[in-house]
Amino acid sequence: MKTSLVKKTWRPFLAIMLFIGLWEVATRLFSIEEWLLPAPSDIVMEAKNVIPTFLPHLGSTVKLSVSGFLIGTTVGLGVATILHLMPKVRETFFPFIIISQNMPIIVLAPLLVIWFGFNALPKLIIITLACFFPIAVSALGGFTQTNRELVHYMKMMGASKAQLFWKLELPHAVPSIFSGLKIAGTYSVMAAVVSEWLGAQKGIGVFMTLAASSYRTSRVFVAIIVAMVISLAFYGLILLLERFFIRWQQKGEKT
Image 1 (cartoon, rainbow, N blue to C red):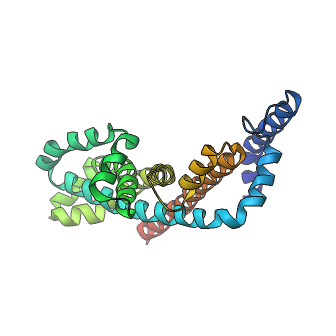
Image 2: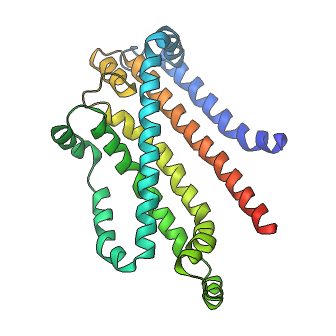
Image 3: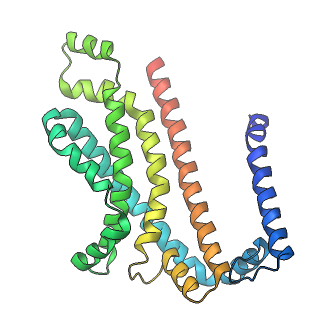
């Protein structure tokens, strides 16, 4: 298993290292000013210097991302379940869900601040809006892709609509649901950083804004890289949960 993991990761790792090396050489060779494009080594040194002051911002963003992701997951699964079990409701309201995603978050954010103030609520709403759509669409697609022959068989056996959903449609939708969760997990960090631009006291978005306004570009890159690492960590955690649930589901089917 370790050998296969090394085979899968050595090419991306080599490509990343080559990119960083070329970046370092280019900044030194062309004498690019640090405020314009810092070298990777300068970014690493800046990261070491700002760790004590950066940790509170990191903790705030992670907390906000996780909270918004959990709310978005709950709302997304709830909306998908209602739309699936009530076809007429789906026909009526599904277009509104599509429309809600066509409005850029950066445009909606100032309105939420006007309506709800500078507390955590507008930020959670932004993250929830970013997360619930991929989860709702993925779950809804998973529900509708259930094997029609199995559905017909369970109906012949006298299964109720609730039994049909919990014992057949929901288990079959698990891979699709996790596909949506992985997308939403990465979106939650991006949405949290954007929401922190709206007058937050702390967070990676606040740190990034302060660094950009003072032309400390290396600090901006530190914030960007940390946000990317958090997104990858969320993705990896959801991937592990997906493998666990699928294995547990397969064991349950065998027994």
